Length: 244
Length: 329
Image (cartoon, rainbow over all chains, first blue to last red; front, side):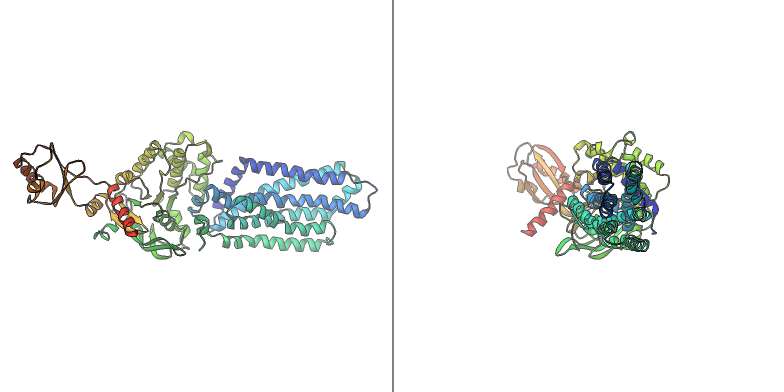
């Protein structure tokens, strides 16, 4: 039987419906972005005109870092729950008794975590840019609107989210406790954020080539990860808890 | 139990397809050193309702999970709905069967219809709305289609799970303890639904502890206690396990029962029950009854009744399970 996008769609639709009625998800999707947009604005709006170039760079770097932590944190909460949560709720076994392939199930879970993450992350980034344009000092605003900064944010948002999602799903397939899975996933989602942070802080000199190279590497990892996670997806262990 | 092999193939029923719905040969599943079930063989015909009975831990659920391709067998082979059991054939087998696990496993934040819609799409079914309407009607839940599953009682959730299992018109429907944890009314409702499915010729593999229901619903039953202990029609199992007997009740105890019963044609032995009646082991109840009546009249006994003793499927089950418990001591 071939890979079916209908079955992937069924999982995505189910997940999105479930998110909409899940208070924890609503809280995560609404409260976290507020924190992550408030903090960088405070950073930028309180900077003095007379600040040194190094201090300005640090503030801008920190503000943009907040924008990239968001797509790492939001999906980690969702993806860490994706398998172990269903197992705890007793809903995993009925799904696995359908013709669905492990890959279809996992891709469905990943897309369901990616879509709301992208919407929230880009909307928040848009609001942030709007606020900067309207209220920040012109010097700060022009630094924020620098092409490389925008490119890094736009390019790395889905890639960082992808990493976080696959790390979360991989952890979720092997853990037996939702909270432990979520904590571990938050930690596992940070490495790409750390690299981008170094670029934002100008520790690594950001260039178009470097950004594209890093993005390419992350894209490759994200694209290959589903096969790796599918190999970890052991139906027998998930259903019985027994190791082979 | 000499006819165990004879009972391994189920009868063909109206609406049956060609061949057997299930062919299981020497199937074994071990988890490390622990044996879940061992050397299990049987066949189930299309349109048959097959009861799979056994105590807790006997391996019933593990057998269902194996046949549902959730677990790989350690050894042995099986053909499910015409497809050999293997990891590669898993999706194809699962497309032809349906499993209702012991726990309904519904998405509680989704409505009844949304749960069913999700599974209809997982089976890639056409006319999703039509199918959902049909299965909801079958389980009498049309009015609750928009209700969130989290708001339903346990019995209603079980009915939704049954509707979900019926969505794909499976060639084989596996029901694992469908009435587990339900109150008597909800249990009766589920059993009535199963009786309706039986009338429609649906092939059902039913694991249950409800022996009265199994006797009513199942064409054949198998009793598993890690190994397959017995298989056949409930009536056949009774005859295999229990000698036929007549129970004689008299107004007052007989002075010398041995003199009355010994030597009567077709009577092989007798014993007095704790209630004071006499239980006679006979080769043929119909042939033995007139002679016993004459012997009692000759002995001036006041006869209250002469009736064939009835053994239920529960008696069969308990006899076998008790044998196993004794054997383990």
